[in-house]
Length: 293
Image (cartoon, rainbow, N blue to C red; front, side, top):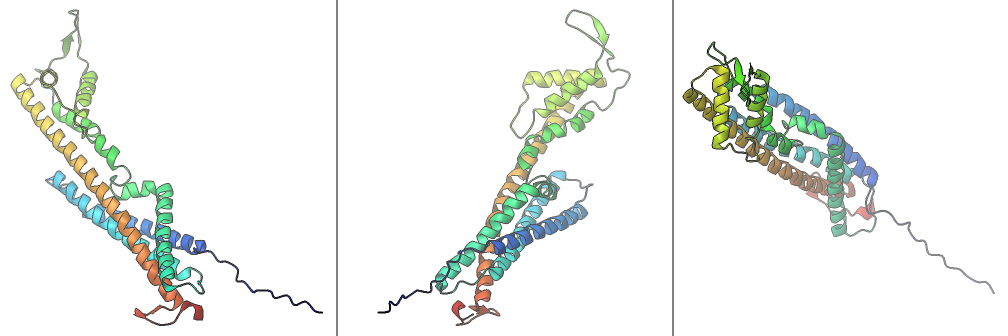
């Protein structure tokens, strides 16, 4: 008797995701994002007028334009990267069309996620520069806005020192010593730095003390010194509020750009996969199944 052994010819299992295609699409997406962000930086520097009469309005408009451009950059780069991932992935023989749609979309989303993580790890500084510090450093930039401009406001408060300005000061013990102008500037800058987006306020005593310092430093009468302090306080508060609003807007734009990029990558990968399998040709659906190729 002869024993007959039947051996089934099983296909080797294939992975549902093509990592080489994902990495290739993510690399292209990240590189294209860098190119578009660099282009946006050049356009932004060329279009912003540094002599604008209303810097607050200019800053707000620039934040809106930067946010729209950030969304466009995310959509374009993610769509191209996702489409490449869909076209470059391997064929799935015998896979239902619905499952193929899901896998292609997943390829696009994974490509977008990989490119986003790579950009955050290696290109974070570039994104910060391009978005004017609003993408990677918006929160910290807004929190320290008043402090960074404290020197400018200090110069305006202590703008001149006529002969009437005090050159000496009396200590608590009654000793007359030369006035410490650097100390006055440091104290003024610290007080201005408190008027940040975090909501710092001046008390009446703070205003009176600062007005007395300005009067002694510049020789202005106390009423004029108080007016100058009030004007600088109003301007510093407005600048801090503008920085806060710009940071808030850019945070929302950044979130919108990420979601739009994920959507664009998924849709583009679905289209690329459909073309890869022959289910879509020149934008027209066909009946060619993936198992026939």
